Length: 216
Image 1 (cartoon, rainbow, N blue to C red):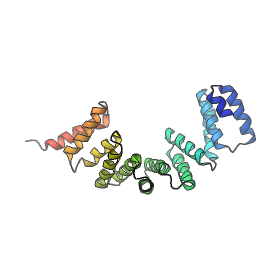
Image 2 (tube, one colour):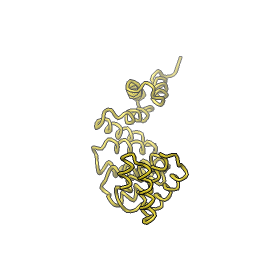
Image 3 (cartoon, one colour):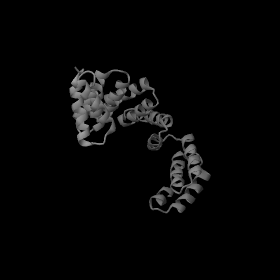
Image 4 (cartoon, rainbow, N blue to C red):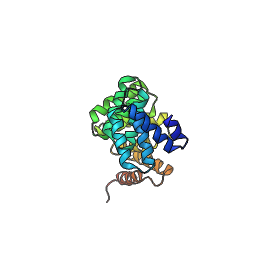
C-alpha cells in the first residue's frame, strides 16, 4: 500500500504507511529502502541515510528485493554492498547471467579482479549471446593484462550489439599496441557517434601518433 501511495504521488500518506508497517516489522529491508527514497525526495537526507542503513542491515532473502537493493547500491557507488547483495541473489538464482554481470561489475570496481573474472566468465558461459556479459568479461581480462583475449570479447560484444560504444572504445584500447590503425578506426567511430567523448578523443590522438610512427 505504501509503495502504491508513493507511486501516486501521495507521499505523506505513503510516509505514514511506511512508518506504521516498519514499526511492526522492522526487518523489512526493501520497505526501508523505499521509505528512504521517499525521505530523500522530501529533502530529509539524514533520515534517508538511516533508512538505507537499515535496508542494508536487513536485505532479506527475496530474489527481486536483493536485486533491487543491489542495483540501488551500485547506482550510489556503494560497490561493496552491491556486490554482497548481488552475490546473495546469485546463490538463489545461479543460472542468471544478468546477476553474474552485476556481481562482476561491482567486484571489478572494488579492484577484486580475480573474483570478478570468475563471475564474468560464468555470465558468458550462461548467456553467450549476452553482449553486456562479453563486454564485462573483456574489461576484466583487460585489467588482467590479457589484451588479446579481451579484444576477442569486445569483438563478440560488437557482433551481438554493433551500437555498444563501450565495447568499441575498449576494443580500440585493447588493440592500441597490437594494431594502432584498427584501434584508431574504433576511436573515430566512437567519436562519429559521440564527438564529445573525452576518452575516445584522448586515445584517438595517441593512436594517430602511433600510426604516424617516429618523426624524422
